[in-house]
Image 1 (cartoon, rainbow, N blue to C red):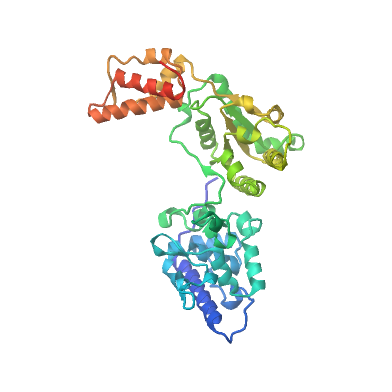
Image 2 (image 1 turned 45 degrees about the vertical axis):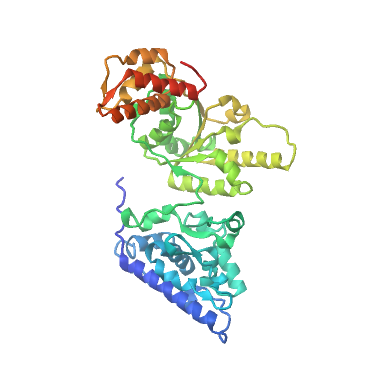
Length: 462
């Protein structure tokens, strides 16, 4: 099925949204500084009606931005928050008025949430959003804060997230100082192409991984390749097997696989190529970072991660799986009990996930046997044998490089048991030496020195 072309970016729609935001801020400030004005509990749609999105024959109003607004059914408050989040990139000067100094304290008004970013631009925070939406009305502020709560629609639907603000630990821990950030997925729909660089999504737990290699570049044993093919079959035919053939009543909806083996043997590359082969994006999660950085909020963030991956059809790749799936010990205190709860929740979400999850580890012996029994496949990535190492050496050497006659690749492949990643490190060193000399000749002495250095890194000697 041919993918629909995105709607063109309509600058007039963006202009209208930003002018609307500017009018709301102007009116909010006028009411704030007018001592005789009553406290205003209403939200922006009542203060100033939002601009109409021009109707199109294809149902997508106002170009790509209007199409994204209609697709996600953003109400006036959500539209205003999105415009506020995008203002630093589209029209940063619009927020300069909120950096006004308080004449009594000679510093910016706290209630405006002014945060001066790089280049002097004001970056909108949760406090800024509360002021624009609610002024100083407590009830309206609470409703505004509710809109930005992690478990509410804007965060759960991957539209707007609250990212950490720079500063000391105390500042970063304060919700009101968090920065408003439009999600990468909304930007991809609303502002496609080079019109606006993607913003960093600090709340994301996964990052997309890609490779410039192809399936034929994989150098793995036949048994490993066959097991990878099985995952590809599931990606291609799994929905039909579950729904049309009725096995969905008896088996789990997804596929969980453990990739294990020494570093540099192709675990990450294989996951990337599986995704590309089956038309799926691959997103990598580092579980060691999740466990340490999101302590206390792990379940909430993992829930959003899996919901987004299931909605968009992503293949999830969990690096360093033994960080959470390691052998369990007795519960000695509340920290141990909480850690076990995190593992149980993660296992539950993985089993309920309808897509493919790949867990990678260098140390299979550290994975609890109870978890292994729940995986659909356990795939070993061994160090390559001599013939495979020779192929890796030959295929990785750049076409621009000539080999010195004394360089014997067959001897290197036979003598040194190296992974594919290690071989690439050796070639990187030797090629840089050739570039420094300016002769584009791969010399035996440079290659031997590169091998020696890599073996020393691994605690081995030549």
